[in-house]
Length: 118
Image (tube, rainbow, N blue to C red; front, side, top):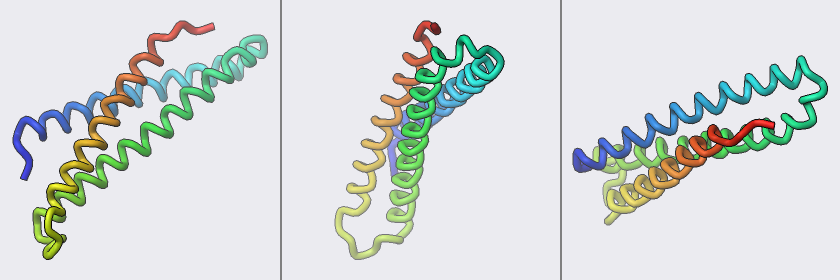
């Protein structure tokens, strides 16, 4: 269905994004705790917390799109899209696009993690 190198790339992208999202979520939890216990830092932390949370939400949506595209491709390959010419190719393209966006989110999470805290 998919070449081994594409499967390896998909797996790597999913793993990298998953790890980056988990690390970002942990940072959000830490910042929320700090904001809760330190009123003076709250006004500085809230915008960053909101930005990180928005990034996480968008990343989760992209991750779900990749999973959906992969499921559609598997279904198509197993006869779920019989009679639809080019459906496998379309699903492959959707999966590749979703994976590319997922890699972009992983890079964005890495960059967010490197930002200095105020």
